[in-house]
Each structure stands twice: as C-alpha cells, then as structure tokens.
Image (tube, rainbow over all chains, first blue to last red):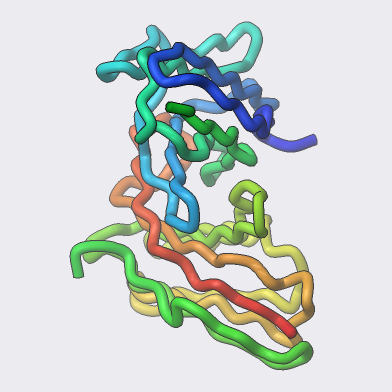
Length: 108
Length: 119
C-alpha cells in the first residue's frame, strides 16, 4: 500500500471555478503535511503547508482530517496560471513521501 | 549558489553502463533527499541524508543504486549496470531542518533534476 494516494485526474475546470483535491495517507503517525505544485517539466515547489486547524493563503485553502486520514486543497476563483500538477506530501518516519499528483487544467 | 544544483541536466547512456548523478544542495542545508520521477508519475523516494546520521536507504530499488554524501554537502547518486527501467528524472532536494521523528515545518527545495535516458 502506498504511503500517500491521490486521484491523478485530470481535472479540467473553467476559469473562475472552485476545485478541490483530496489526498489520503496511510500512516496515522504522520506529523506534517504539505501541498507542492509542479509545472510541466519543472521541479516541484512548495505551495503551502497544511496545519491541523486548516489554513488559507489567498485563493488556496488547505485542510487536514486526521480521523479520516486525508488532506485537501481547495482553489477558489481558478486562474489559467493555476494549471499544474498538485502533489501532496507527508512526513513518514524519517522522510517525506509524495503522492502521484493531481493534474489540473484551467480552461479559458 | 542560490538554489539546489544538479548535474548533468541530461544524461543518455547505454544499457549496462554505470552513471553518476551529482547534487549540490543549498549551502547550510543539513538534509538532502533523492527522488526519481518517471514520466507522468509521482515522486519515488530513494534515499535521505540528515547531517552525520546514517542515511535512510529504504527507497533504493535495488543494490545497483547507491548514494553518498561527502562532507555533509555534495551528494552523488550512482547507478550501476543501468537498465531501461532506470530511465527517469532524478530529483535532488535539500532542506534546513530535516524531518526526524518530530513534527517540523519542512520545506524542500528541489533542483531541476537530471533526465536519465537508458537506451
């Protein structure tokens, strides 16, 4: 069983739409969670950390549900520039595990 | 340098040859990770170095893969007797904290990767 699982998508949404991604993790002892963004043929870059109480950064909201062992990312008012692959990540015992990523395309 | 540097950016090799991939982390970063990413796939953890501790090699797919980190800085990932299934982008990342077993606000900075193609 993979440490982290994501729906690979693709998610194709119109500009201005709200879109949400979920990511489930298997290790109940995981401590920290993150969302990374990866543009085509580029390296991943940290989008935001996920805090227990949930956190917001502009149009982006991240939430953690420990009981059900998933994290979520909500993007409001989607922009064309949001098109990318979104990777969730969690700290295992000694390292950082990534999901396979969810591909988002925002359509004009 | 300002960021994580990897070299070469592209490597084409023949099946059965050995390759070495290099990673220069951000100066002062104690934690260094190697991942690989196959086309359309997520990041597969390979190995993790933290300071002077023994590395976590649990992600290395076979004994053909090895990595070292000299002087707590530069790291080299070596793949012996390369196979076609080794073809992927090999990404290195560093961070100033390291995960350990204590919750941390980990931020990894990735290099731009080495695209390895085994013919």
